[in-house]
Length: 170
Figure 1 (cartoon, rainbow, N blue to C red):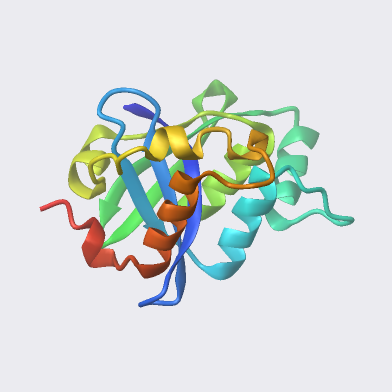
Figure 2: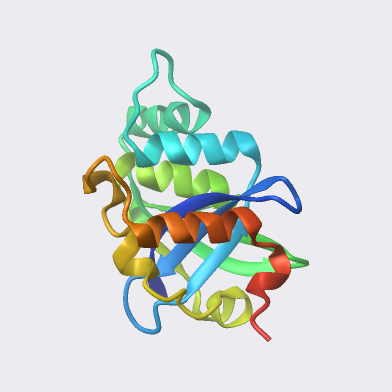
């Protein structure tokens, strides 16, 4: 099991679909690309930037219900990749587990700042080697000066032209 962090959200121009990039916080620092829908990418980015909307989003509503029942989310775990679809689970106190889409699970995790983990088997199957300088270039992006570093801009250009085949681990 490896701890993960959200390092970027980009867009796959070939599929015109957002791609979420998660990276191991230690170990080999591999990157796990997860293609998500536009609404899910929006929810993740809003949670990442701690943007508060006048009304709760679905994942915020879910968390309010959990809290109303005196429960808490402990972590999010990416558990498997089956038929090219990632599966995740929300792990609540008392080890209660609920199946979830990775995009929803990540949005929830970011909203309440709980750890995101991935099974080693998932990373072995779907992750790619660290993109040179990715961790440093994208670390704490919110704390960067208004001008983005060259590394971040270069990586954004890479994401704009990347396709799923670019992430093929073989």
